[in-house]
Length: 396
Image (cartoon, rainbow, N blue to C red; front, top):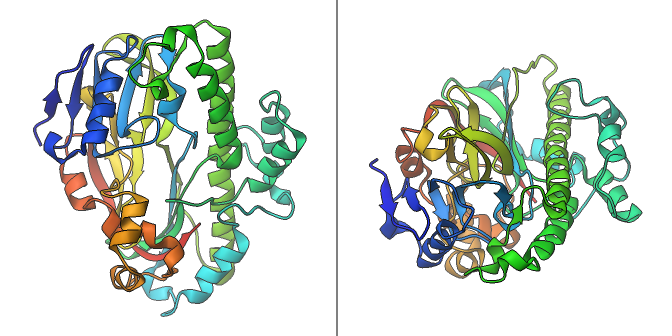
């Protein structure tokens, strides 16, 4: 699609969506972001854009020598993992309820946690992306209570709630994939809120149009403290996904002894990275967006009853080498609960083994944008490698 452009006070806003399709609250958020004194070049907006807490979901924010903690949000490091298996759909049982029950018993959801630290967790960390579990907690952020750290240890390898999920999918070749979406759990929330509150009290933020966009400046003690905790939480979120994926793989191996797994795909979509764009070193915040450098593999999920996509980045400079993180909500959780019924949920997820009760009504597919339109609008950002159809879904 042709990119929509909106003039901003400091930089312009470039949208991979029609401006008329973006709700007024989100447009105002984007204009506030584009007016920040530390904003760089332009604000890139993905086709799954919608209003969000702190900053607009689906926005890519480049800042010179500054970071806005609310733009990252409270679920620091939230992201996706997916892995292709060697088995095909025909080898699955006709009824997947038993498999779903086994996953739900093995991987705690919502506010729950493991009863004890998983013994093999100490073996994680045999690549450069991730620290060992023990090292991660040995270098945990300062001034956190013992209870909070113990909870974080027991929540490592757990799903959480909201839009987080675990799915079993099949691709267009009928191969089975494991896929999941999760973040940094309670400890990420605690760390984020701590730094957001600090940022709002800083003198240079007092005249901002939106205090949620309060930022830290480089080479200050507040910025350095945030960076340490931010990068730690991003690493914790990655470990959380890897542990869950390992549990999921073990369940599949128990049920299908002949199964094998390909290299797994990992991507974050609520995080900060230090990158070079337009010849400058900048802090890039992807708020509900994935990195899509040329040949990067990424995951763009739909909803409980719609397709998801394994994609490869095309390295579009204007999007800061980014793409959407999913379909994006078209209505709030409250609006979804008022609009739809459990009968609608059953109808829209009729081909998926999942819970169909009122507690997950706000995650009904109808509350999300059309994933096919979202993918069409970002053809210059990513190419589709695999199309995944949901067969089983576990929600928090």
